[in-house]
Image (cartoon, rainbow, N blue to C red; front, side, top):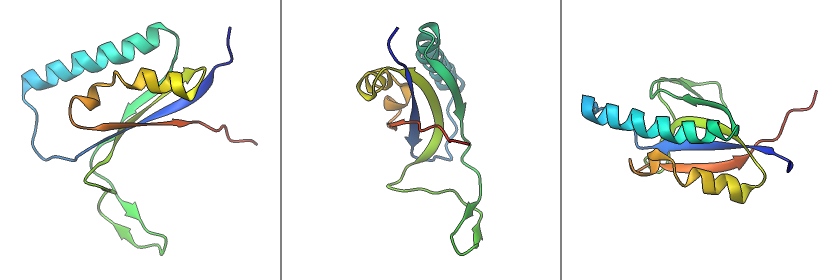
Length: 116
């Protein structure tokens, strides 16, 4: 078996106050379930989580702002850690992410373990 490394998918999208319809939610759940299920069935899923659009931003001077970081009109909305043999293969996996059809983006980054 080839050497597997961990890669993180960072999901970004434009924050919106508009709530999706029940039909849209059902479709998104089905698409995300298929995407995550495919990766899990290959024993390549390490973890995944959604991130809410509510939070606090702590600046380097200690000032706390009741807000989240939005850059280029996008913010983090979730992440996934997967096992893959290379950045290229992890990127191929990420190409099927449902967030892309919602107008969002996926950044694929290698995970560097912390040493104790």
